[in-house]
Image 1 (tube, helix red, strand yellow):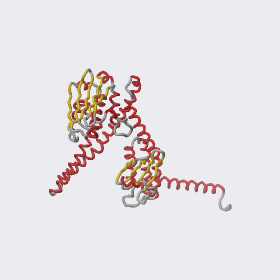
Image 2: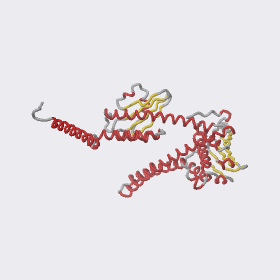
Image 3: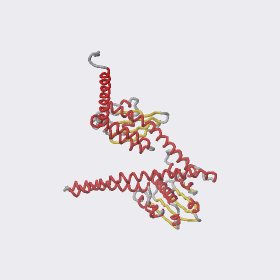
Image 4: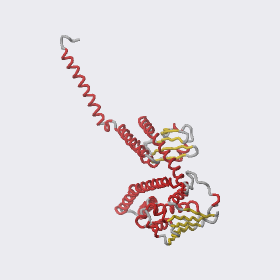
Length: 418
């Protein structure tokens, strides 16, 4: 067009320069936009960062407890909503994992409606559905009492796409664990079953690892938070002049916090009986029963005679025996309706003997139902599995209205080899 004004070299130079300049501008714009995204698009940056964090953490989920801590807490915090829940709807039951301020009773009623996914107050998204259950993510309005925006809803849909696989894995883990626990408890005691004793051992080790993890989490987080909360209240009490009524009210709060802390400390001890290593099985059981006696509706008696040789055995064996005592006491609190419960540890004919007796309602020993997964008798099957794992023997005698007696014997030689 301008042959008389420019030559070919100038045209090439202008073209190349324009391309370089345009590329530099576009690259710089992309670079600075990415770098300044948290300032230019703060909401989008927060959502993307939270999405990356949740997606990275989903691989570590193995239980519903992890599901709440890893997913729900971050969703509620990121969206700044009042609360959220993951709902599992089974054929005859509904299970809800919730976080924040959300009415679980209302959610249970709401899911019975065919139009609840289009609720005017809640944001409801289906995660997955198959023949055994359906799962949903339910989010309340934000703290300004407005519904979520389009960008936030799209973000939730991305979260549910990640959640779908994780929830299915958690469901399968729970189902498999329950079946494995029942199988471990019901393995036969014949010599032909000795080659699968490793199965019980693995199951009990996994249970103990989970208990230790939960106890450590409670100690390092919740109990520490309560400790600092109590210190803050005490400092307020000392710092400010208050009237008698306010002081009494604050003292009641401090006592309540201390009561919660003591309850958590007892739960940590039950999850991780660390005293087994420090003071031995007999004194640990005595300490445990003494503490439980303050919270049970019946009298607890504990006797020990000539059983001190059990202290020379390994920690794993003593932990199994302690768990058996725990299960016997838990069953007494739930079902016995007794006024007196007795535990005794003795040594007879080279066998360690643990005896349990109560004067409660008892049961017909000729009509003991077979325990199923999820039934209240799962603990009894767990106890039976521990006894079989120690190559021990369980005998019981009971009649309706005449209490119950359990006799557990564990060969000393077998205990030494476990």
